[in-house]
Image (cartoon, rainbow, N blue to C red; front, side, top):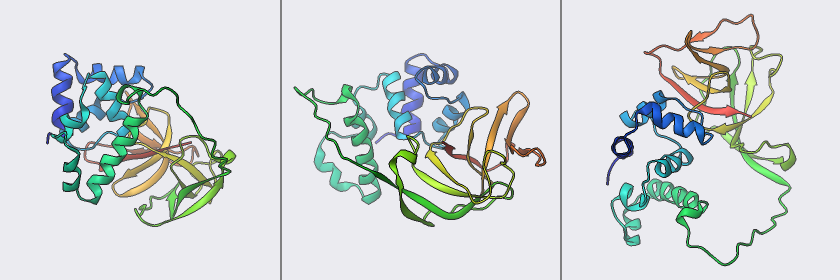
Length: 237
């Protein structure tokens, strides 16, 4: 079994692409990242989301994803995976089934009407700070039903804001919908983990440096430096 960093680096070089070139191709396909994300993936510091992973495989012409990344073709090897491994493999399978390139053609495709009137999402108890950072516990949530017409497309979970540093757009105790992703472009508002504190902020990533910006001008930008433990957790919708 080959590692994701090894395969990404090998196939990128095989296609004669620099990290900047691959980032540009992903941007052209609607995935806004920069070469630093690719560098982190190839160094094993972070992993691309499954959606990004499949787009990279398509761009880099990885034809047999299953055998290339998992090192086998026999379905009975599925039994060697633990529960976490099976869950991840199933996630890949679901996305492959949504991509016509990897699905056996059928004569007709029937899309059933579900009549869904509500959407169930994780709603975290821990308040995400709009002023002082709070740690977002991984299992500190409940599942709530929200009216389907109020949930933005792509929402994965909700968080509740505390503080006033994102006013007037976001206010204290307001719930926000978040799409889980590990990248954001300059100027986008998201959920960030910085040195084990979690913030809702606007990302500044330009020639002037890297900062988490408050919309309320009375708060100073929070710098992100090379020694910071920094992650993008999601995009606020």
